[in-house]
Image (tube, rainbow, N blue to C red; front, side, top):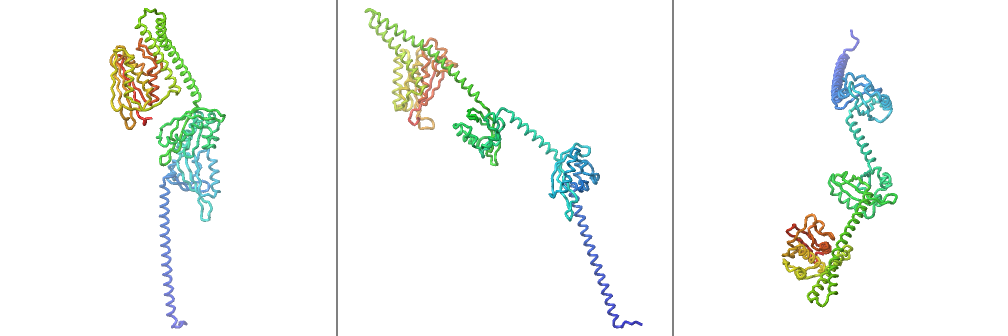
Length: 548
């Protein structure tokens, strides 16, 4: 018989049911937790596999080692780099792939790496892959820590930098070669910065050239040029800078400078410069140049010029004395002979003969006077003392007067055909010098046409092309002996005469006088000639005040 009251039994049953329900719920909750943990684990495994795939497929070699450098993990690229399998790498010390001569240094770096706080270091190391030649590699070493911050492992990123090392070595060799060339060449070599206005590089030759060391020159900056350049050369520097503004790549600009060294000696230098670098918009930034001392060459050229001038003066003197001995002797002999004849003649000498002898004396005197006048004209022109006094003149009348004067002096079998074209009435010239020009050209045309004949004299007056200034062109043509081609380049030299003149008298001064008078007018002269056919001289002279 139960001692529990009957009214309590329903409560016990309810409690049991409640406990059973709670147990079911606890079971369900545990099941949910297990499912979540399983899902998280699967996700973690998937993520780990994802990162493992990324690690394994990375193009660079990746390794994970412990603190002693023993390999724990390695990707395919690392295995390929070291020419072994991934499985072989696991558990192997990385140092076995380091070149023997670098192993002690590698161990020292590895020990320091674990002590240092900075997370990443980069080393260059010589690796020896299995059955292959050594390679230069870059190792990026990362310190890995646990949750408490203690170092537990090292991550290695390995890259083959053999090509880069070879390029760097080749570059160093090339730089060393260039430096050796720059330091051993006798030429001065420099790099000038246009913005800084100073040399940023200059080779050792600077010391022998200027007496300054390269470092002293760079320390002087832009004042270097004012210190050593002749004042007359300083304006040229600005001109050179402007020329470089439009210089093309590879275009060489040459210059000469007069420079004072540290000892106060002035030396000549010849430079060759090109654009070395440009900025983003293409403007020249730096100039590369080389220069040599040409002082000795300059002195040699001066000596050579002096010798050449002395030679020319000597030849000129010889030609002058030869000309003088002939051209002065002939008229003097004629004057002396005629004077003696007149002096010793008795009354039987007719009036006509007396007049003829007097005319011979006068003609000879005129010849000598003309010769002396030509010599004086050339000398005054050479010394800058020949007077030039342009004024308004009647050009056509002056030409006619010269024609008449020349025809009177010439034999009867010559005729000068004069004509003018254009407005030739008034011109702005020196009438005396113009007459010398025309008289010499016309007298030459007659002199070198020994058979007689016609001389054509034409003057054409017209405005100069593209200008309001007038120009007068004088053209004188003969049908004489002509001028040999070899003699044409010497036509305007004093005392020079063509090889084909024979016994035709002359001093060789007429065309020199023409040239000197034309230079003062700013005019020009041209010649066309054919031996045995004739010669044409064309003279062009500005004819209005606007031309001067």
